[in-house]
Length: 251
Length: 111
Ligand code: SF4
Ligand code: SF4
Ligand code: FES
Image 1 (tube, each protein chain N blue to C red):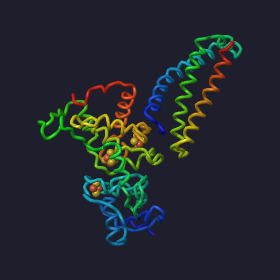
Image 2 (image 1 turned 90 degrees about the vertical axis):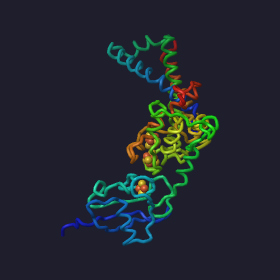
Image 3 (image 1 turned 30 degrees about the horizontal axis):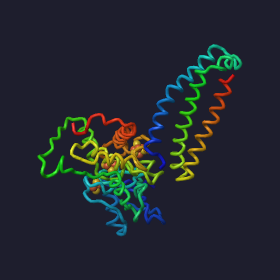
Image 4 (image 1 turned 180 degrees about the vertical axis):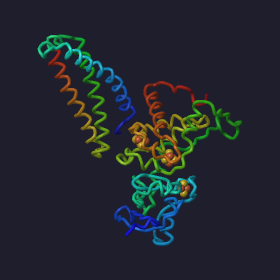
């Protein structure tokens, strides 16, 4: 018998963190179809209790990431035809995050690490308060270029899931939080550079990165957290040696 | 802490030291082997060579530091060690490397 080419065999890891099983579904194969389309079809037609997460469907919100054939991907912008292996699609929740149910993970630790890395903008009354005239930011300064290169993160946790150090060491802040920290370290308006440098070099900090760039290979929007982390490591080394930063970020 | 900023820096700096030293060491081996020296002839040249003793003892210290810090990281990531166990792994490996290395340096350069 000829194998049916108009359907896809979809293997989904279902269950919670303690008990998981692989469920097999058949979904129609369409010309232009994303992995998220397939998951949605299965939930609507076959398994109404299938848990997964998405919001924007256009690669903006970063909520739809999961493991596709063993690799972390944003599913709303991953075309089935690029990841299908022998007519088969294997889906599982993101690696290194606690599973809530089926394809939905608990992102709390991911975001807690953003906070731990001081991934939040700190304004200062002297520099960027309401009483001050707007700060002039020249896009051409080296610091601003560094900040811009790291800024388009959509918090999808794909890099976090791709990183082996995260998998091995639960303390490690991970590529996304550190990338965010680097973009703020280069923001002239931010006033917490010293505090943030301490935060990213404390336990589980940037010094644990192995610089093997898995984060960069998988980041769907083409950022390089590894490069940002290299910047943080340089700043950390300079700080520990008592050398002042190269160019003051406000130059 | 598994890899404090100070240990991180120590590992980087020791690597900086080790890179040229490894090259010098390899060049030394090639030079000696090309010259067709046998063990006794090599020992005759290394014994009592103060410069060589200092060079290799620095090599040993840098290695003990660099490798033991790296082993702590391996201990955390692969063996899931923490706290006291990790400190022991680091201290014992540093001591073993230092002792074995220094013994070798002594054996080759003393006298
Ligand atoms: S480069 Fe660093 S942050 Fe990126 S995946 Fe490797 S260890 Fe993780
Ligand atoms: S750096 Fe890239 S992969 Fe990581 S969370 Fe941001 S967008 Fe996602
Ligand atoms: S659903 Fe928003 S990025 Fe995929």
